[in-house]
Amino acid sequence: MKLRYAIKRLLYSPPGKQDCVFPYFGTPVNFPTGAHVVLRAFEEGIFQEALVQRICHLMKAGAWYFDIGANLGLMSLPILHFVPGSQVVAFEPSPNALPYLQRTRQEAVLYQDRWQVVGKALGADVGTADFFTAGGENSAFDGLKDTGRLGVKKTVQVEASTLDAEWTALGKPPVAVIKMDVEGGELAVLQGAVICLATCRPVIFCEWNATNVAAYQCAEDQLFRWAQTARYLLCNLSTMLPILTPEHLRLVMRDTEEFVLLPQ
Image (cartoon, rainbow, N blue to C red; front, side, top):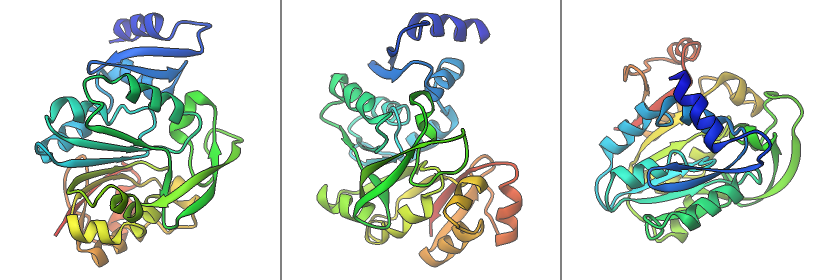
């Protein structure tokens, strides 16, 4: 594995090169040198493979998948590849990632008719918002709040929207699965998705990290309380065991930040 990583790093992200490309599911993926998620893909073969498998298992031909916090597209391309006829919408506002993602989508000849990229930050409101960015290699940690991870971040303005607004603009398609990784802003995304979630009842995979949600002044148990109100079952992604109480969620968060919300 170490040898495979070293070879890929040398071939696709050599020293001194700023803008790089590597092949991934039949598509050249564009990325800034040293990008955290790409280095993980070099090491793992398929980035977050277990999560990819779960998403694919739930998708059917013609179903829609929303990749919220898509970064460089590594959680979009496998779904397009493994699920024929699937429609994928990737939401990514970061100026450190969006240009690369857009270039990848333009060059994704196999998937251009099934893959859309929306350069907006999703949350509870429509408009513009401050957005905190790290270096290009750490764009996976960019977000609407400064979480304190990775040191000082630069603030830029980005276009903001809600999932309901974007879903409506897309023609209210049948969304089967949503993946959210927005560095602590997950609850705001859910709060802006009331109509879409009530109509489609998709399965939702999300990160829920104590440090990140604290930056939003959000209590750790808020995801559990939201799930109860919205008639979703919150489960530990790795074990698929249900979270039974707010205290249970806080304990599980000490071991994992990956959860799934199942419609009831």
